[in-house]
Length: 258
Length: 162
Image (cartoon, rainbow over all chains, first blue to last red; front, side):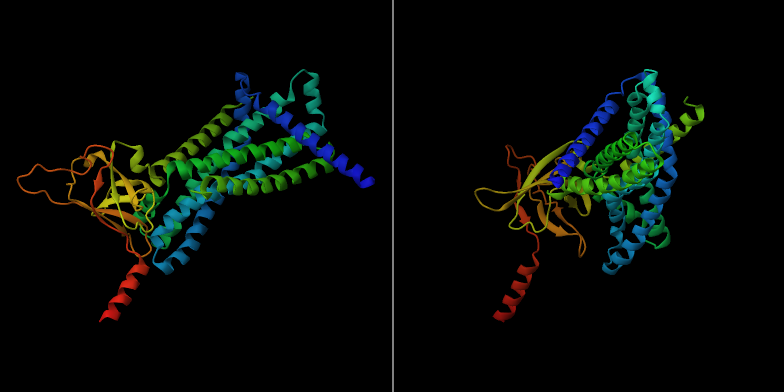
């Protein structure tokens, strides 16, 4: 009997969590049209986007460089080192750009969002806002949500571009692949709609998921120090898993069957 | 609440993102021939298209003049038909006697359509590919893709008959 009760209680709490998260997303999504909220969004783009810029640029550079190095040692066996450009560009634009950016974003910005909002809840700042008739969804959640959704695709684009330049640095300047063939074969292989735009779509989806999870985990955190630490951990774990799972589905939809 | 410095940093961030997009658009991605400019369509029937795909390039002596837009099977004759889009810069350029063959770029490279311009009989009005009326503008002279198995078969057969 007991396990049946447990099962029922578990199911109900999961369902209510999904319901709460959806209500919060609703509040976040529909709180955008206020013009006076735009400075709040810009403030959050600074916190979420600009402050993630350094880690994105550095990891993009090194990932591009490592891929050029690895790709070169394999491709040179077949005399196909001219294909280094498309290899680096396609893997960055289609997969690594959106996915690694989202993972870094979840670790760098997502955890910070959860901790910030969790602490706001623990110190009852959210309740005081409500007492002053300010909707915390509008004032706190919505600007962070939109700032994340705006920043992530931009970060992913910067990541891919820096990575391709990093590949150029190692492939052309160090290992001596011809610069002309690096760019020209890349140009003939990479398609604007199919590769670049699909990568941007991917990172918008990842942004929605990561920011949603981060904000909900903070909003729903148990207002104690353990609760906030647990919520922060869960944010990083759940968003990383969600990114990788959704990435497979999106890749299958976009590039799977022609 | 939003200080000037924050706004400046966000501005730099957005400018960087725009720069990255421009780099990807201008330097990395190809816009394709179909998107830009006028094109005209010609088709050719082959016995075997090998590994040719839609979006493969059509080249004249190595210069890209168009792309393969569609590949389908002729319902009556049951042979593959390759439909090509050629840039209108090259309208009325290639005579009707031009031939197309499916070639491979390098040893492991992708396959493309090689167009060899034909000749014009002296004293006659030249007819160009794409000039013919109606839906079907076919190039008659075609050479199929080289299939390795066929080549080996021919080699073995040739040895036997000696």
